[in-house]
Length: 144
Ligand code: 8DG
Ligand code: MG
Ligand code: MG
Image (cartoon, rainbow, N blue to C red; front, side):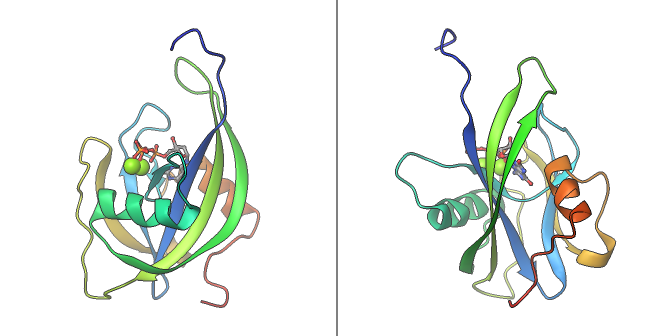
C-alpha cells in the first residue's frame, strides 16, 4: 500500500534483432514520455528473465521471439515524475521466431507504435538508459 517504503523493481527489456536493425517504440508513460524505448516490462514473481522477455514482447508487439539471451544488467534511478523509481534493468536480445512476422501496437496507451531502426541511425530522443549504454560503446549484435 501507499505506506510501504519504495523498493527497486526489475525491468526486463529486449533487443529484438532483425538484420542490422532493432525494434523500438515511442513510450507513452509518465517516465520519459515519447522517448524511443525497447519492448519490455516488469518481471513477475517466479518468472525467468527469458520467459518475461518473451511474454512482454508478445503482449506489446504480438511478435514471437527465439534465441533469447541475457546481455547486460544496469541499475537505473529515475527522478522524473512525482515519486522517484529505481529499476534493475535486465537487457536481453532475441531474434524473430518467424522473420516475416510484423510488429503490432497492442498497447497503444503505452506506445505510439513499433518499428525497426538501423543501429547506425537510431532515432532520438532515446530513453536515457539506452542512450547511456550507447555512449559506453555497447551494442547487441556481437556473435548473433
Ligand atoms: P508491465 O505492466 O507490462 O509489466 O510493465 P510496462 O508498462 O510494460 O513497463 P515498462 O515501462 O515498459 O518497463 C518497466 C520499466 O523498465 C520502465 O519503467 C523503466 C525500465 N526500463 C529501462 N529501460 C527500458 C527500456 O528500454 N524499455 C522499457 N520498456 N523499459 C525500460 O530502464
Ligand atoms: Mg508491458
Ligand atoms: Mg513495456
